[in-house]
Length: 456
Image (cartoon, rainbow, N blue to C red):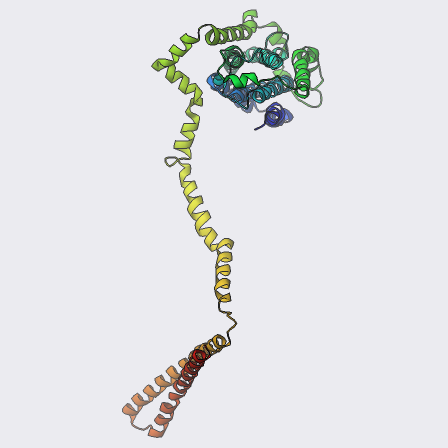
């Protein structure tokens, strides 16, 4: 998929659809606490699951795509916490930095001849510095570094989860904090693999690498500016104290679910700063492992535990394996549906239905059209054969009925003895009528065949 399309889908279409439905359904959700609880749990688990799945992916665009799934978890978590204005604020912020990341990734692919495997890149910083700065700004905002756009919405969602002071809110807080560490780790893992590591491509590739053209630099620059300043400039408008920019007539938040005061003043300062601290630890860990001690990282993956750990997360929790082998595969429950679709729907139904009728009519019409040879002797043969068939149809049942009547008369005469022989002879002579007609027809057929041979 082209990266501009990916940027559009992940920044707007994919993210907007489900979240917008929840935002517009806020008057209904606010009076359904069980539904809000389920949405909170689903969002928190999704954020953690997607972040851990993208932790050890090697495809450049796939890492950013799993980051989108993780951000979707944050958005749903905010909706489950009844903080719809914060969810919409983060939705807008996410659109800027995700579009920037995908477009910058497209510039990298364009410069490296569509090479998406991060392990086969490296050392691109001197060749494409503008693209490097764009990805770095996007990664820092994705990590929610203070005073960048992501900081004003992402960390606020985590704080609001803890400010709920319920079990589900605590779980969402800790999963969101762990997810912050994972996000920082895979973001700087991407930067290290692509720009800072030892070059892993051929020299001819590096000789022809060039930075993004001006027509690409313009949208990257605009998105970078929004990524730096938009959160700070629009924070009070979207989530400021007492702001009714969105809540008044578009979004509804029950008064009992307003948590801004608690999130701002009642949470311990360490818990407020913990997501930022673990983000810094994750970024430093990625830079240290992939740039300072790469040999230790390689030796770690050579051990049995390290190799299994890498395979587990790189294989996405083996979800694809389970799905293909045990759900839709020959051992799965959906295989029955597949066989029914293959044998019944595409077999019997098609043969009996319109497809089969059409084939039967086509084949029969083709065979019948072969009879039309244009030879008059063949037409004479067809006429004679038709006459013979008509004779059998018309006279054979009558002949059989006459035989039955004659035999019944003979039986009656034997038993009674009063039926005259002339009446019996009348039935016997009538039995020969149809037979004589058949003999004449066969003789005509024979004559037609002889004349056909002479003409040939």
